[in-house]
Length: 424
Figure 1 (tube, rainbow, N blue to C red):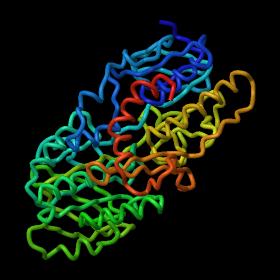
Figure 2: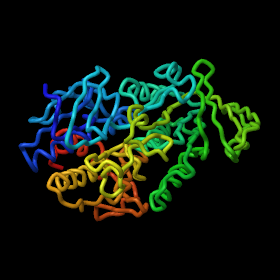
Figure 3: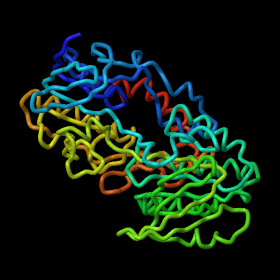
Figure 4: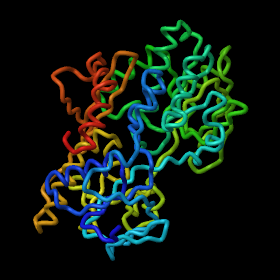
């Protein structure tokens, strides 16, 4: 295996494979190496559907070797260090690879350990997460067998991949319990680090109605710090004790809350809530090998790669591009965003190789398919300015059956057969 590549791609996920495939379609003689240690490749957008009992988990995974683009070299290594001043990348094995141009897209890191007790209790004690291939099926097991009680769904304070996933599964669970006739026995809570249910007003208006329909109690600006599986408690910090908590303190047949004043600068209050079912989402950040590298945005506490948000070129190293979940651009971290970012990286990288000016621009486009019940879905599309960018000639803020088919049938097929191959 050679140690030098014309283009070195870090990450063999959606972003890395899409870019590599598109580059080769433009210029078939490019010498491209792809560094990724994973044996398996996952279609993660379907894990919500797995957790809702309508998608086979085994259809979301393939062998990495079977999806690596032909005419590229798969380097099955894990990166440990970037040396962009020397055009070098070092791997955990000690191997060093050099490049002319670098594309950084290893995805995002799931910081399970940032919630005390979560890792130890996942997959048991009625605690699960659709952010894990291993545990997504257990989510459905919990939902299907839930007899009623307090159900908690969490969303961290950090940006996450697929920002809608924490509440998508909540709506589907509520719809299932409604059809089962037990929703009135369910005390459902959404503990979110965000300040609103959705950042785009047109789509948020729909979700506010969905929340009311299912009688979901939402706690905004809350940071989940611990989950105790044995005692079935979730602990979170919040500045304000909202009405949903205080009104519930003395109610029957719901979780018990204990509130402890905190003397910290932020005047945070700690709340402990008992639950019977919990779907937890971990905080997320850039992979540690990016956090500790010269490529990181020094102003970003989560360590994302510093890029020009429109050209996706690194702001300090002109032969470096980055895309996907690892970048500091203020866009949502979704597969739909990657689909719009990849052609921009390809066009601008080829321009740099040809000693031309970069001209392709990414406008922050992202899309978030949000099922509000079984058989109906709202496709939220928007850009950096949080302006709706609807693709279809319908009001996509209104959940409908056609978008449900898009999410459950069409997009998985497109991913494996077109997107990874650079043709969609």
